[in-house]
Length: 143
Image (cartoon, rainbow, N blue to C red; front, side, top):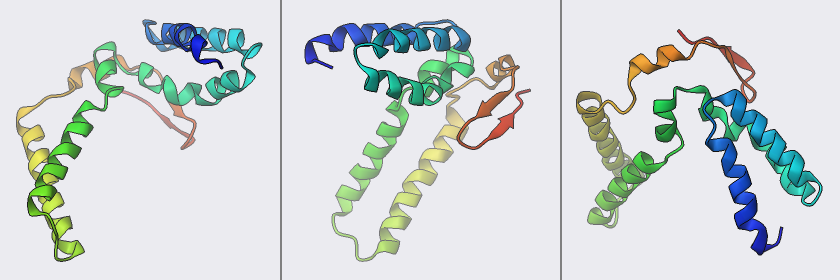
């Protein structure tokens, strides 16, 4: 698609992410894909293929959605691992870097278990429908 159309198309796609539930988001996603199909069939095909992956987070409670689609915690952890590895500089062997990174990850895990509650467990009780994972072909039933 032409660069000048990016803003308009992005705004249309973004409508799906503002929907209150997964059903409405899927409906809007498909409607936008159908509208784009005439002018940009490759984009519409990509939207059709990626629908399940892009909207999978909508099956979770609303309060968890922003945390699920954000990679900030992972990026922060990667920066910490890189910072610690840069201090050492050159590692004598592969085992030494595995020990250092393992220790950083273990420390980070302990901190999160003891201090942080990134997602409230109680909110998961709001998931009451069976969700099928198309990649693994399994069905999970929430409590």
